[in-house]
Image 1 (cartoon, rainbow, N blue to C red):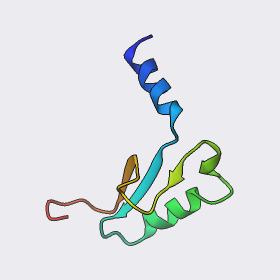
Image 2: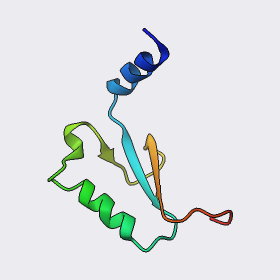
Image 3: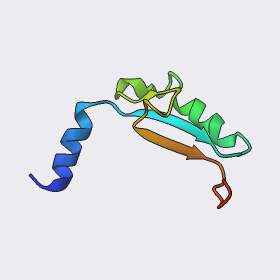
Length: 70
């Protein structure tokens, strides 16, 4: 087993929890994220959950422009 297969096996043990952070965008990205978590695509079927707190999240999804002052 190589490193990549070991990483995949660890990642499959627990479902990833995602926290979305808006860095001052026009909400276009947030609309696309809302569409992606709709029942049509159903990310909970593969185990992905959206969290309301970054403390409990595994993945930080940043939307909007990132500058040095952001």
